[in-house]
Image (cartoon, rainbow, N blue to C red; front, side, top):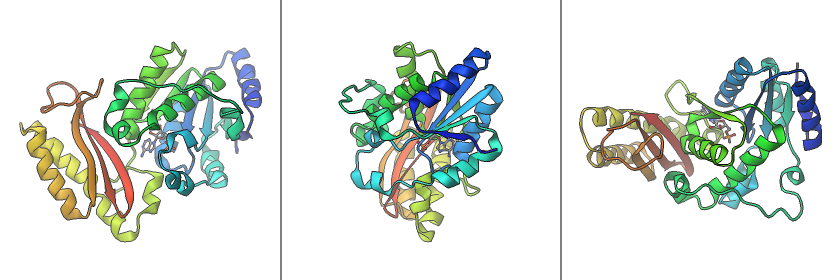
Length: 280
Ligand code: AMP
């Protein structure tokens, strides 16, 4: 059955209050819509861990550092509601902008350190926008658990830090990246690739996999990274914004995977910026 679409925080709070009274646990899955199987895997994880599940759809203007990226972001509410129907979601929260940023809104939640690197260094203000909206969605939903994808691993770490630092009573769960059959991480941005760029884009996860293998075999990140950048250029990537080995916890830069580490990349192909990360 299709979930009720709630557009006001008062409606959301009323639904949640009823569930709380019945002693039910509540999960929330924050999204910007244009749902694909990556998002749906989070919904499935939430459904199996919680009695009630809220999916939120809000294209958050504050996390876009580029006006045309915001304008081009797909909005597919009807298809999203249909995609969610088989999952037995209890509420689809699609707040009107004023429910999130009312007139006079003046507060920013900013996580230091973790946001200085990777996407934070290339997208000024992005993680302030994320931390601000996510803290609001946590407080508006009052959920016990929140589900985020490892696809956006830095975002996951930022949200974990923010929830811990602010004593938000919510458990943040990370879920594995869902990929297309050729290995490309699912993303709403993939739809913007033309056929040739889409075919070439799979070189990103493949090159990262090869670089991870080289790191495990003892190569340094500098040496393995230079080879990987050459491979990406040969595959048709116009620019590699970053390709870095970092610690899985605090995201400090590493030359060798001496502690739990991940490889992070952002690269442009066919006018689209793709990101990915894998465990090393
Ligand atoms: P977005 O709508 O892009 O803001 O993403 C909403 C949530 O879905 C975030 O927690 C993302 O990390 C997660 N997500 C996006 N793509 C994937 C994917 N391919 N696999 C798993 N989770 C994903």
